[in-house]
Length: 526
Image (cartoon, rainbow, N blue to C red; front, top):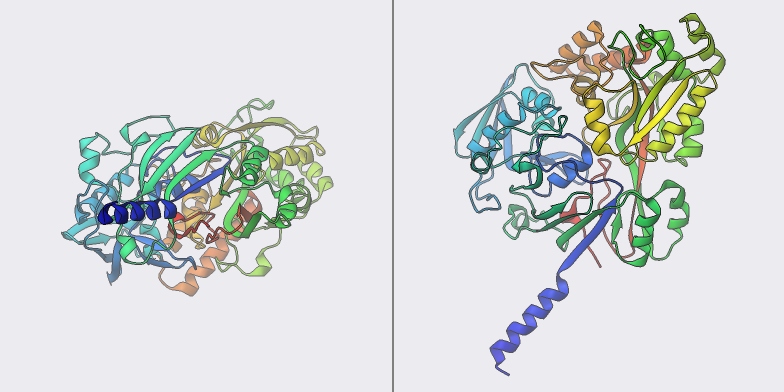
């Protein structure tokens, strides 16, 4: 055999031997590949394989350079970001300041919270091909974290395919960007069969390879949404899958003793809470006519005090939750004093008395809308809560659905009460206060995820003030005060923050972080 041919064949064989395909699963699928159309952690994590941010979070969750190699606060309301040179989109075109300016302007037209983050980031202006200046409406004490919420797209690609504006996911709009993607990220989209399989392949020209950011050995990715927990785990145990993002919590103790399985776990920066419609004069999907019981704080408090969060922790979450009174994804990280973390006590008798005082001595009924494939045991939580409410005369009809249906429904204000979660990234309170607790602000953004449309003028004013407060001790006082207002007025009913277990086959290495994102460039398969 020709010696050169033999060497080439051997090299090809070795390359094939080292090529790794990651096969993984969780209960739900991506919603859309348009990166500015649905702000949901899992959806963002899939889009982050293709699209990138100006700044990213390291293994310790601290902000570090991404597409921007540095940034400077040149005045109270002006920031200058220097872009990495030599970064290429998947089609080979260079990343420039024009793409960054375009992406932030595009995100400002989003129907979800990307609009808020783009607005808070300010007005972008190109200085040169690798420099962008942002002028913010007010000083922004968390500017680096704010810009780290907007994916960067190719202006030319969007113009070519008629997707210069984000699609409206709430209205179930579809465009070329729904099922196609082209960014600068570590992986390139191959194909997406929604509900079946999402496939990516490694981008050999990713800037992060030379920078040492690609530590793993994954070449190809096959993600398969599998709704049945039993089926997901059977596929992992049989070797058909390498990794499961959401093993059933009741199975985790046994899985820890399985020689073929590795459990990775830790806390998540995420609040699980209940939202109630406090806007309409007549409550939807309810047997109460001409009134909305949830406008009355006594009713909201009654529902709160009828819930035994310790029982939820034990029976539903199997210990993988931390009940909280503070409606922030990370109460400790947000700096709120521990003394404030005191729930309204579980007291069914008090709940009945409050309902009677509010004019509902026999209770009332409504529909309780919940996802069944988004949070840990979300459907089971809703069923258990409805059973607790029933003991005080509340007849809550549990309505469950996949997150692909749940989010458009609650985002369009089409529910009486719902279970939701918020978090995944920053511990700073502003990232839940402005999008979730502030009243709806159609013009500037804010309140996009306030699905219950709660409104409190004092709270709004406080959030607006702390948003631009650069004196950190003063800002912390405002954060604490906002938490107290939300607690006292029962704008939402906080339940708990989650602990998140992952499951992989033995010998696989992942980096478990509290954003619940599997960052695949760090994954090492055996």
